[in-house]
Image 1 (cartoon, rainbow, N blue to C red):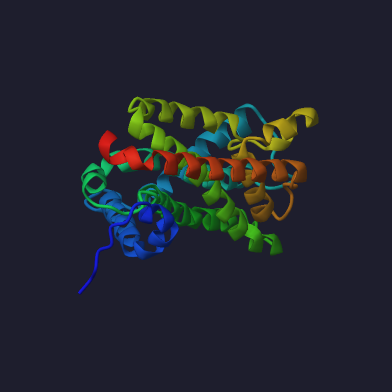
Image 2 (cartoon, one colour):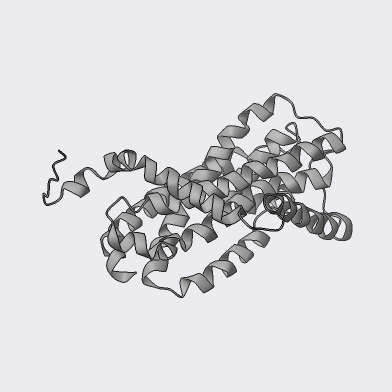
Length: 273
């Protein structure tokens, strides 16, 4: 017979252990979100392929053909753009969908105890699945342009992990704010749209003047995009090491700050929702 122990501060002390204990709930929530996204849809998984492909075409025409911005080395412009779209799409989707995850699970949050951190992380994992599906287009483009990667592609999982961590910190912070201040759901799309154009998605970050590049790299997604291009474009997109260090430092700060703010607000989620 199971014994339920009620002890002040017990949940707080065992919080991180509870994340492991509730791993089955994490799996169920992630699988449910995947099923809801693709069940009874007209194009289903194809949407995860069509959206980044259309974005690539628009950016290639605007920045490559009309503005005539340079590519990286002799790499095809479309391939350079798509290598930037991959991490950005994951970051923007994870941020947008995680922000509403607690509100969308109101019934579960208000009735059952479990580490609330599970809910937004499960949503981000679903966005990561879309991210992996989009890799199919990358391989098709490489074959189309006969532009095969070299040994640098082995480092791509490290930058995939980095973009995941870069997404988690801000997503947790905004998620906790959205529970208390519901008008954040109107601000988030603007933030995502603005971030798309100030990040080097449709162009190379090397076009920036050297004296501004370190400051520009404080946007942590910049280093991730540069890293993806370095891996995919056979090193023709050089890594700006000071920018990489700055981006990783900002990512670490937001990861700490996001978890801290989420945990600080977590006790009031059930009442606010």
